[in-house]
Length: 99
Image (cartoon, rainbow, N blue to C red; front, top):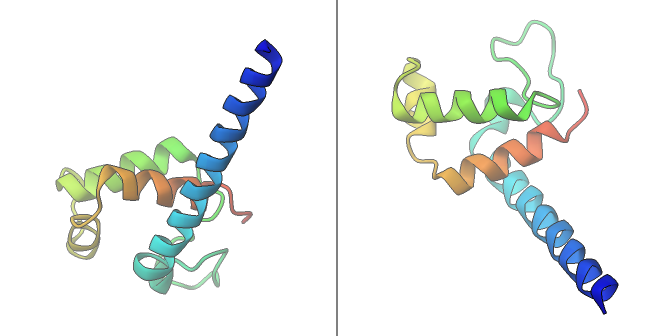
């Protein structure tokens, strides 16, 4: 019985994680990918690729842009519309993409 309960809990966690990554992919496609791409972009592009970046770095940077404690006219406007859930979903998506 205990093993069944643990299995069900783990299934719920992996399902939630998959949903978060899917939601992050959709939000990244709508908001981020035009400038940052989905995977690595050309070396001479003006914006850094986000694929494979550290989760905590991405989360911190997006929250700082949203809260305007990190200044960039473009990023402050874009990140200003993101909720904590949006940020977590985007971070889950990009941090799991290979460079």
